[in-house]
Image: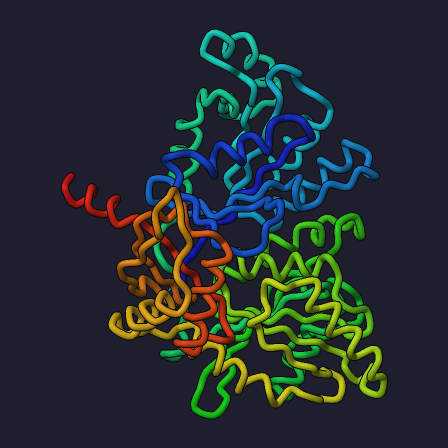
Length: 450
C-alpha cells in the first residue's frame, strides 16, 4: 500500500522577523499551488503547498505556540528545539535590519546539533544593494550559507524555495499493508484516553498507557484485522492547549498530529465526557476538515456521566454548538475503561469509509442536480438567472464534485448549502464531508480554444 509522504517545514524565529509574511508569501504565491480544503473559517498557521511539483506542509511555529509568559530567549530556544524534534526541515528566520541578537546566536548553536536540513534566512533585505551591507554581520554566526530575502518584496524568494525543494524527497512511501486497509488515526488532548482506547480495541496491552499527559510523544502504528477487514491504527501525541506546558517536545506535538492526518483516511477525535468539549478540541476537529478527512467523534469516559441525564444533554448541546460544521460526523459514546460502546466503532468506521471512498456514475449526479434545480430555482445574479449545466465527480476521499455554471461568483453560500444537502441526501453521503466546486462553463470553453 502506498501513502503520500509530505515533508513538514517549520518556520522558526523570534517575533517580528517576518515569519507570517514569509508564510503568506509561500502559500499565496501564484507559482505555489495551495490546497485549501473547505473547513472552518479561522486563522490557520499551516498550509499544504506544492512548488515545482514538490509538496510540503508549511508551519508557522509562532502560530502554534506563542506564550508571552516565556522570556524571549527561552521561548525562541524552545521553538527551535521543538522544531528539530518534530519537523523535517527548518527555516530559521532572522531580521536583516535589526541585526544579530542573543536569541539568534543561541538558536544557531542549537541547530548545529541536528543533521536535519537548516536554512538560515535573513529577511528584510530588499535588494542586492542592501545584501552586501546587511548580510555580512550574520556570517559571524559561523554558518555555511545564508539566504538573503525580502518576504514582503519578493527579493530572493524564488532562490530560497528552489533550494528548499531540492532537499525534499519525492514519491510515495511504501507501507506493507493488506489491500483495502483503512487507516484510522486517533486524536485528542493529552490524557483523554487515546492509548487506553486503542488498548481496549486491541484487547491487549500493546501500547504504553499512562495517566501522565504526553506519554505518547510520537505516533505509534498498529495493524489490526477485524473480521475480514484490516485497519491501520495510528495513536498520535496529544495536542496540548497553548501555554499549558513548558516541555519543548510537547509544544510541537501538533506537527506530528498534522503528519498523521496526512496518512489517515478516518480521523477519530476523542472528547473527555467529564471535561466537555474545549476550544482546543474544536481546533483539532477543524484541522481534520481542513485536510478533508472522514471524521468520527468519540466521547470517552462516558461511564463518569452515565447516570447523569442532565449532564449528558448539556454535553451533547455543547458539542453541537462548538462544531456545527461537522454535523455529519457520527458521534459515539464510549468508555475505554469499561468497554462501553466500543463494539460500535468498527461498524461505524466501515460505514464512514464506504461513503468516504464512494464513486458515482455521472448520469446519477446529473439527474440529482437537475431535480434539485427544478425543486428550488437558482437565484438571480446580475439580472440573470443562474444556470447549472452539468456535474461530475472529480475525486473521492472525500467525494468531490464539480458543477458547471454560467457564473460561479453568483452562487450564494445558502444555495451552495442547499445543493450540498441535496447531494448528501441523493447520494446517501450523510456521514462524511463532501466538496462542491463551481466553475464557469465559459472559462472551460476558453481554455479549450487555447
